[in-house]
Length: 393
Image 1 (cartoon, rainbow, N blue to C red):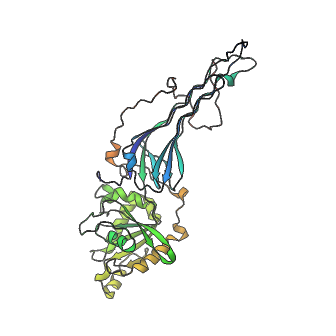
Image 2: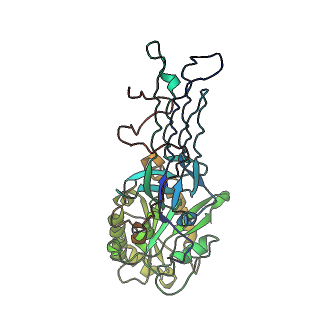
Image 3: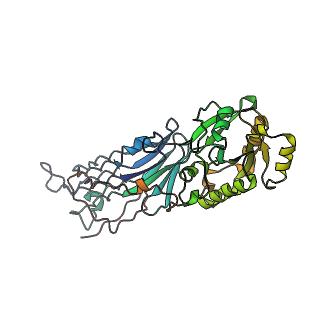
């Protein structure tokens, strides 16, 4: 996967901009011996903003952009002049990108549709100038507020493809062949295991110019939850699917057992996958006659609908699409974005080479001429329109 252009997991270092310091300036002009305080406010620091881009399908650009720093706010000046706000940094990401804290694995935010903007890190507020603190009893305040410090965080971006149907099966179960038969996608097809090395998407046409999206991921093998094979890494891409299509070939020794093994691996990866609608497709069924199909049907689980298909012989595909369309449009299978609970990143869901990536210590440029302020004592949650009171000298 190191040479592949499909990158769905990347670790980056983000830093918002620090706020500019307020000015302690006093008005000086001819014939104005006591002009009073007129120090302006400092500018706010820049935000780190994630923006959904439907034209992107991979996190590859961020693999070569490991450090993302926003601009710092400038200090205020005399004449109640406000400092310039720091430049925001807008990072384009594919739709379906989920962000986790790299240290704790905690879910932070997600970007689900084109044009959606999510503020990942908020820039520090600028400090108030001394003209805010003048009063009848304190006409010459010689203090101003410093700007709030920047926020630095290491985050992991994980891409989960947005599709209606996810294909689940062992290697060489016929998933890629089915995708190529139902859609215009042309995945690599061969007779050896793990032919599919990265997820594939295909748009399946349906009646009356309707369509739905189907996702094919690398095959799963028994023990995938313990690190065997490739399928475990790509199971994240079916977490957003409304329907899961399990595929077991007709020449399998025990179709029911293989289905149960696949189900167990999905449950180990994320127990919430058990709540999704499931359909079982018996592939390569062109080698079966009607009597064998009836015999196999008696041994299949009763809690999941099944269908016999053959992508090569074009058998059962219309019936399969009818079943999938009905399941996709079932109200019980409609996925609401707030209802999705993303599992935290743990040892089973992390990518070792990304977790071990070490960022170089890049110092923050000091554009406002002020020293970095201690972060202790600042409130992380604030409103842009609310100012905080300074410590009195």
